[in-house]
Amino acid sequence: QLANVNSNTVNNWYHTFRVWIATYQEEQIAKSAGEFELDESYFGGVKKKTHAEERRKRGRGAENKISMFGIKKRDDGSVYTQIIGKCLKINLIAHY
Image 1 (cartoon, one colour):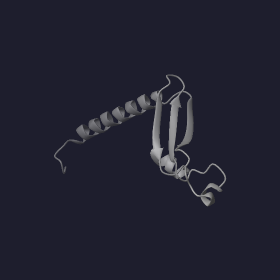
Image 2 (tube, one colour):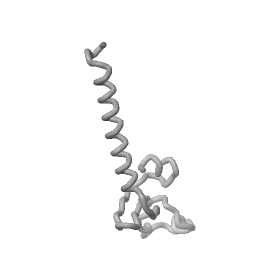
Image 3 (tube, rainbow, N blue to C red):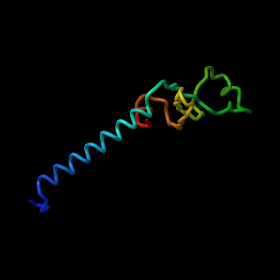
Image 4 (cartoon, rainbow, N blue to C red):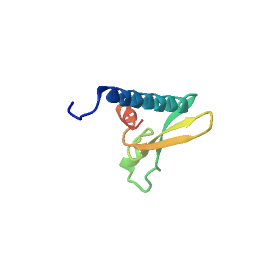
């Protein structure tokens, strides 16, 4: 009796909110149904006009490059991309 509302009214509102939440979740699940393609890429060019010591480094390092992660839905071709700091599992989960 803190809010001066009948318990039946509270139960009805609680039930209504739960139905709204369930409907929203079903809509979100329907949107995310289907097949997706996931990929990460690194963008950025090679440093030019560097000293010989710096050019000797081998490999395709991502040190001075920007990493991006993308999701493509195969059904309708919609694409979602996000620039991420480091391509680590915890960073990818935090963005999606």
